Length: 176
Figure 1: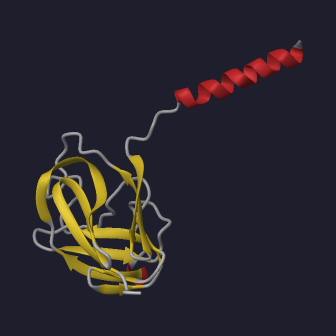
Figure 2: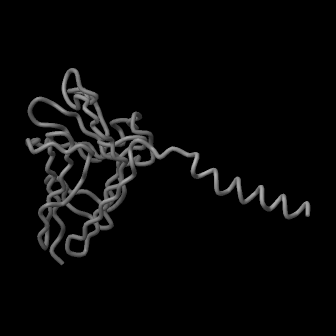
Figure 3: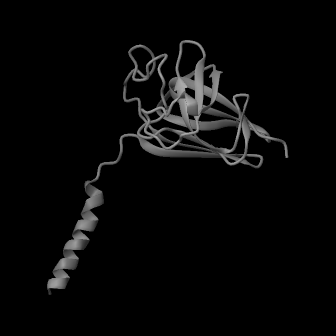
């Protein structure tokens, strides 16, 4: 009888615990795209605009300041083969993704330290890529999204889209 009550309590606790947990405000997302024989994967947590000003002097993402496009953990980009990202050769591997938003061109930074908090840039010494990318305007996207609207046999465009800002990033793979 005592064992039966103990088991009932364990079952009740196990079933109730997940119901009490609140889901994170920024849901986890992963996007994977195959370009020829190269697999590109973006892993990130997806913040939601919720009526906030997103970019600029009064935004939650400040101009001329380092930002990882995501929440909670640093967003990562992983390549299983070497490729060219925004025209620059990049070895296979996993990298944290950082941006510096500006009025004109933005700076895209990939850093070899990928397992870090979204507010802690590991330092310029570990940056493996720094390039300028021109943002575009688009219709409002409430939740931060990464997607590949254009995919060809040897290249694709990765888009980071949040609010009315789109950052297109060209990815080219070797012809094999």
